[in-house]
Amino acid sequence: MSGRVARSLCTAVLAAAVAASPAVAEPSGPEPAPAPAAGPAPQSVAGLLKQLQTLYRKAEEAGELHNGTEEELKKRAAEAGKLRGELAEARAALDSGRRDAGRLARDQYQGRTDFSMYLRLLLADDPARALEQSHVIERAQAGRSAVVERLTGAERHAEVLAAKSRAAQDRQRELTAQRKEQHDTVRSRLKAIEAMLASLSTGQLEALSALEEKNIGEAQDALTASGALSSVRTPSGEGGKAVRYAVEQIGKPYVWGAEGPETYDCSGLTSQAWSAAGRDIPRTSQEQWRRLPKVPLGSLRPGDLVVYFPKATHVALYIGDGLVIQAPRPGTTVKVSPLASNPLLGAVRPDPDSEPLSAYTLPELPEDATSGPDTGYNAPHA
Figure (cartoon, rainbow, N blue to C red):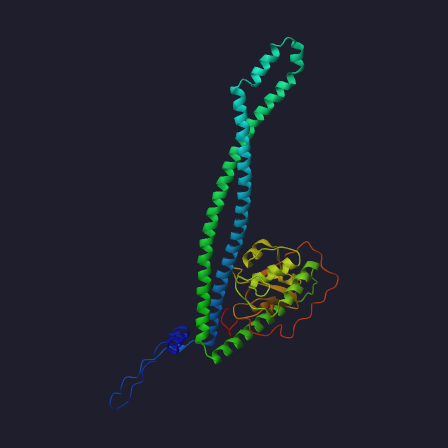
């Protein structure tokens, strides 16, 4: 980026209009030359922080929408593959039924129908034998009826499957286009974050980090004072495994859309932690919030998922003592953060029916488990 473009971008991001100060009249002397027009004043650190947090939140919203579409596309692809297999089997059954129907038609044409067989038996020299062999006629009639029913049913089944297969393929095309649009939206919003960060001085970045840390500390203190974190609970066996998995990922980079094992986004980390514990949960933070049972913050136990922002666009894994493990946002790595590091929406429990362990010790955390900002100020996205 050229210096001129960077300076222009800095001015655009940081500018805030201010009212011009009223002029002070000179008591005497010649009229002074007009003073230069007042230029835009830089935003306050709080204003910059709010703007940056909004950009991050919008990028994460778009990322989670993209993740949801990606998951639905995978399911639709699997459904379409299953339908193609069923349709192939149905068409094979239909071909077999048509061959059987063809043989039946030839039998009728050549006089080997049930009716002609019946007449031959009735006109036989021994009527008693005809009565004894009536079951032969019934079996023959049933077999031919079954041929017709099988053919009719196979035709209907093949038609239904063909319609479902076409619908599944149409939905796949729609989702593919939707995924492309959402992908472009995410990239555009991440570029906006990059541009803003590139426009800020080292001093501004340090001030942003300091204010962010102060705000998080105050929010955490308020949460502790409310008594919401006063209880100490042990996880279930599965929850303990999920925590251990998450601890092992500390230090790995955040990359939106990533599910490991080397990079993660927020819900990629939580879904993989619980998958490693033997329980599949929804992929996205919105679906985790929507589909998993809610629990009060005062009832949190390690392994529970803490969901943030009104649209449930961020999620972290609770590890106890008022702390979570999260993949915060672009430019950061998986880390341990205060539970109140983002605006809280609520919490969910992937294993509500599992009994807690009688005793539990949190796995040892790396020395740098809490290092680095939660906001990713220091680096653009990968």
